[in-house]
Image 1 (cartoon, one colour):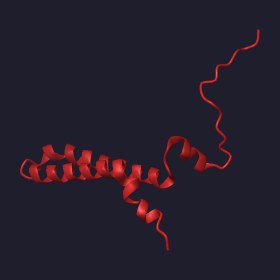
Image 2 (cartoon, helix red, strand yellow):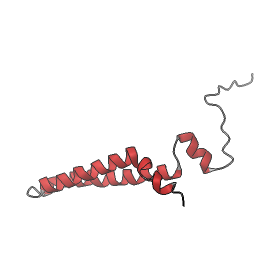
Image 3 (cartoon, helix red, strand yellow):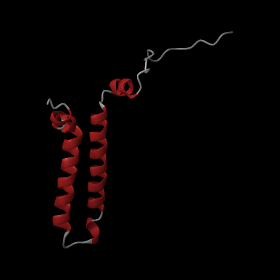
Image 4 (cartoon, rainbow, N blue to C red):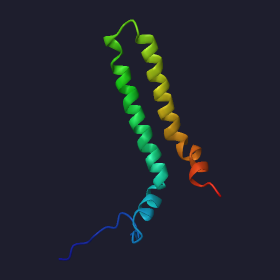
Amino acid sequence: MAAKFLNLAKPVDMSTGFKDFFDTIGLTGGGLVTKAIAAIIAVIAVKMLFTLANDPKGALRKGSFALGTLFVAVVLALYGDTLFSTVTQAKG
């Protein structure tokens, strides 16, 4: 008895390499780099928030810095590709 296979997705030609891959996930190379930078900034902000308990006197100042950093990371993750599109698509 022959095995019957079920296709879950249509085949995608990825012969041109990374461009096809980024097109399938809906990102450009620059967009992926922007998301990676935002993720790194978010990790730094969360680490800053976890170190607040060690310094009760400077907790308000350090907490506001951490929340500001987290806000920058979120804005960069959501709108980074739009913000930097003028740099990457500049016409000379």
